[in-house]
Amino acid sequence: MELGEQVIREMERLWRKSIEDMHKGVVREYAATLVEEQDGKLKLVNPVEGTSRGVAPNLEIPEGVRFVGTFHTHPYEDGTTAAFSGQDIAASLAHRERISLVRSGDDVFALVRTDKTLEKVNTSRVNREFGEEVRKHLDKTGVSFSEAVYLANIELCSKHGLAFYRGRGGKLKEVYVP
Amino acid sequence: MKERGTIDDSHLWELKELWDRKREALGISEPVTDFAAIDLEYRRQQRQAKGKPISREIRHYVAFSSSNPRFAFTFLYPEVWEVRIFEDEGHGEVFILGPRNDADTYNLALAVHVFPSEEKGGKHAALNQVVADRLERSKELSNFQEVSKAQGSLAGVEALEFEISYTMPLSANGLEDTLVLERRIVLKRAGRFYELIYRAVEQDYYAYLESFKDVVQTFEFREGRVARTYRPLVQTPAHAIREEPEPYETDE
Image (cartoon, rainbow over all chains, first blue to last red; front, side, top):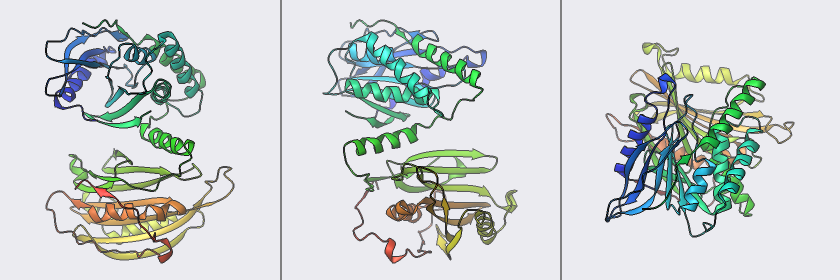
């Protein structure tokens, strides 16, 4: 999956802003809205700053473009990285996002809606299942927090019919496709 | 306008804090994150779950290229294998993680190790010194054998190639020894040694040997490219050649 130059640049810029005060022990999530222009190119618009634990995307999109999904960052003061949270996955499903993106560290993660994606979602159940999956993997020896979250992402994508991609820059490779 | 509330990642933070506290209590450090290994393992499990054999087929090759001057070379490698780069005090390594063996105990690996020669502060001046050093160190391995050694050329410079075998306790119960084969090609250019390494359990070694040969045959330095003058060094034993090599495509 290729995201395009503008998306790559904007993800990089927002990631840098997310960690610009990391040396002071402060990180902030940033979000933007992913749209498809008339020529089919993807673009990130409406960048917004949040807190260390969340951010509210601005979904007011200009005329002539189609809503695709959202992008946001997952920065941690200690440099830990994390793919989607349970709430991210539930929101992506509930809002029928075609593509949801997260940047954490150098990695970019994507949830992609497919023809197998379930129509209905129980947000609290997704959150609970996500927490159970993460804890299950952390109970195994030698699994890092980032890996436990990653494994939980794969598991939840499998349960809900989402495709899951990972990569660096704008070129993402398929990890799981239902 | 679509309605979408705040993205709330508090739960993720709570899980992380829980994990940090647990690690502190257990006195363990954060394990190294390796998504590539998870991806490989996941693909393998998916194939097994579907009752499909683990594929030896290499569909596409991609080019390795880096802007880092230490890695001023290119080569083709199987797209589905994962590349990692390591650097440490003059040394650098492009490490390519291949598939797990059937017993799920060992990853096939390709690597290009770059390190300084004596004139740039390294330990060795000549190729034969590097090879002698590697063989000497390998003697400590269980059931070590030097299989073959040959001289040739690669990427326009002299190269030495050697193949060794040894055993490791890789069986599921850790009691039985598994034969591991390893092939290295060492060359020297502009004050640096380049060591191309291929290592796998016996069963996988021959199944994927063509992939290593493809790495070798496409290996070239970016600056001052010369016509490739590689000629095979160590001959592949007749029993190791697949009768019907699986086809592959390249991006070039």
